[in-house]
Each structure stands twice: as structure tokens, then as C-alpha cells.
Length: 547
Image (cartoon, rainbow, N blue to C red):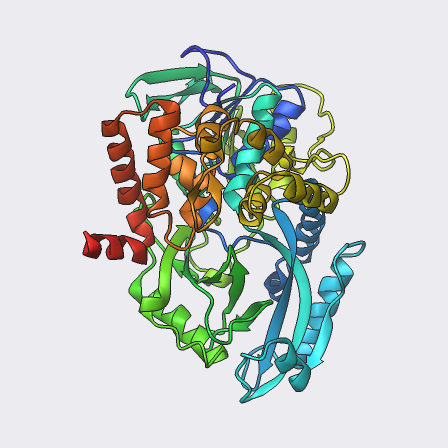
């Protein structure tokens, strides 16, 4: 079943979820596993918004301890353990080093106290406890660190989700496997009500222009930064979202680059930022500023890029990074609660399942305010509990904490499975590793469809992606456009060239394997490059110069 199969235009469901980011995908999966008839809608593709613009960490939120949000830290650490267990192919342990310098706002005593609290709150964790390192030990661990003023460092572990997009996609695939319907590129323009109660939604198919109306007694608005836009259709609703902008830069390996992730303090404003080994590159970020611009086109500003470069060069003097070293950037809006008088960094990262009936709104309408990548599963469980109550049904227990995602389902350990796959695949080690990182245990199913030598051919040398992934993206994983296939299915859109080059090769595979016309292939490449321009990819400028 393709994930875009939503059924007849006036189908009735138990629950409609608006927004297919990680939180909406998690809600759809949880609800489907509990037996509800679910429809998940999004005006774009799965995970094509905020989910794809995160720092890609599954973490307890060490910094939240400064704001005394102990409950949020404990919840995050618990969810980190859950995700390490149910998605071992996507979520992996990540060592982080916190260098401590003279003049930092967070000195050795404060960092030590935070580390102890972090370990206590993560009781029962599978990851190692923290260690405090002296100056020499810190420099042995990370020789590229600036030595001047270095007092020592703290070493601890969190989790990393290399491809947050895939985490959302797998939640959607499992939801569909349990009966959910999913409509990508379905923009919700109106929430339908009758006699003070929600009865469904109406809108337009963004790809065909066809209108739609779907019916359900419960609607969950989990549109992230666009929550207020969805609610605008209900009339005079108070503002719920006051998101802040976070920008990242991506660079290749550089002199002094650390093997561990660094969690350092920026001199400009004291805000911590990350330098993270990621996807054979380095991910550096993030900023945290107010934003009231166009939510559909958020771009990293020049000053943000310069700030992240300068702070990285300060912490790692041999890096000498310049604008020319930036492979691409990305920026997004955190869907935080509206708090106009609070400092950006102090706005809570807790989520809320808002029942609009409590404030005089229609019964059966819920909105999700806030939410973190790390805690998406817990948020989904709470949202489905609320939906079941709204339906007047018993709240049956969620199964998502113990049921692995599709790519995490192996008969033995993940290590045993991956070792055997690499040995038996007949592919290069690069291609085998790529398939495992992207599809997990489902790599075996995908490879079984590569029945000809042509389907086993590598179409993106930077990642090792093979041709069979393109028909799989469209026929099995619900891609509708080339951008869907590259940026959120094969993950070739996150290579060092931001998918430039891989887009043309993928379109050529689609011509051969899916029957695309030359006109469609050219149009899809053009659309992809127009879309990716917001990432400011260096390779796009290089391609234009070469052309």
C-alpha cells in the first residue's frame, strides 16, 4: 500500500492527524497500533519540515538542567533508551566532550554538578557514565582543541539519529502496515465543525489541485510551526506558537576535527553549540533567535554562518574554516510555545497536548504545542490517550515503547544482522553500510528487488546508494517527487553535494525503471534544485559556474 493512498475523497476515520513530521508520524503509528482508523495528512512530504532541520541528536537535554526542567530531562533520557532499543539502525550512542575554558559561564564545578545530575536522572541507562578529564587528558582525547585557557573537559554519552527523516518515514510505514492512510501533499485549509464539535477537515491536493473532505470526530493538529495557520480556519484562536529559528552549517572533515562530538560554549552569547561528526561530514549548530518571517522558506543568514564558523575556529584553531568550506546549510523553526517576554533559550522545550474544548473551542480538536525529536514517542502516546478519551473509548495501553520500528526488527542482535548482511550482500562495503544506515533490517527486502545487475549499480558514488532504491522509494515508501526520494528516502540529498549530481542520476534511474519521460525527469531535477536552493549548497553554485 502506497503511503499516499487516502481512499475516497469523503472517507470517514476515527482520527485525523494534521502534520507528518516526527510527532505526527509517531501519533499515526501509535493510534494505528491501538486499532484506530487513522488518516495522516501533510501539505508536503513526510518529515519535510522541522524534523529535517534538527541537530539530529537523541539527548536528555543537559542544558535543560539550568532551567530546572528535571522532569523533561528524565523523560528525554528514558525515551533515548527506548529509541536505542527500537531503532538501533537509526539511533546510535554518541560520545560528547564538553571543553571547559577560563572565562566560560559554566565552570568545572557547575559542569560536574550537571554531569552528576544527568547520570542520576538516567538511572538504568545502557550508556557509560560521565568522566571528568584534566587538561592533558582532554587534549589527548581531542588534540585539535585550543589549549590556551583550557581547564579540562567532561566526557559523556547521548544518542544520535543520523537521518531523522528516516525515523519519521519508518513510523509512517509501520502506521500504514497497521491500517493507517496517509496523504502527503494534502494541504488542510479548513477544520470542519458542527454543533460545537469537530467533524473533519477540508483542503486541496497540492499536486493535482483536487479538493478533499475527510471526516473524523477527532482531529489532532501537529503541524509544528504551522499550528496557528491550521487553527486560523477555526476563527479567533489565541496564538500558540512562538518558535525560534535554529541554523546549522555542514562542512567536510577539517584540520583538528574531533572524533567525538563537541559541546562547547559560544563566547558571543554563552549559548552552547555542537560540532558533531555526522554522515561522513561535520554538522555545526545551532543558533537560537526570534523569527516572524515566512515559515515556508527559512534560510540560514550570513551572520549565523559567520558566527558558527568563528566559534568553531576559536575552539579548534587549526580548522581555519571559511565560507568556502561550507558545503551547505539548513535552518528551521522550533515549534515552541508563544512566550514573547522570555529569552529564546529559556522558553520551555516541554510539549503540551492542548484540548481546545477547555478554552471554548470545538470538542474533539487537539493541538500539539512544542515537542522534541527525542520525546516524539512519549508525546504520541499522550496524544493518542487524549484522542481515545475524546472518542469516548477506553484508553488501551500503547505498544510503541516495546515494538521495534520496521528497520529494527532482527532475529538476533543488530550487530549480528549487520555483519551478516555486509558479508552476504555482494555489494561494496560502502553500499552495504549505506543500505544498513538507511533501511536497517529492511535492507534485505530492498536488495531482494535488485534482480538485475542494473539495479545493483551505484547511482551516487558519494554515498554508495544503488539504483534499486529509486523504484523502492516510489513503489514501497510513498515518494511522490524526486525530492522525496533523494532527501527523505535514499538520503542522497544529504551527501556532501546536497544531492546535486545524485538528483540527475536518480532521475535517470526513474526514466529507466519507472518509465518517466525525459520531460518529467528534467522537470523533477529542476524542481529539486529550486527546493534545495534554500540550503545554500556550494555544489549548486559550482554546477552553475561549470554550466
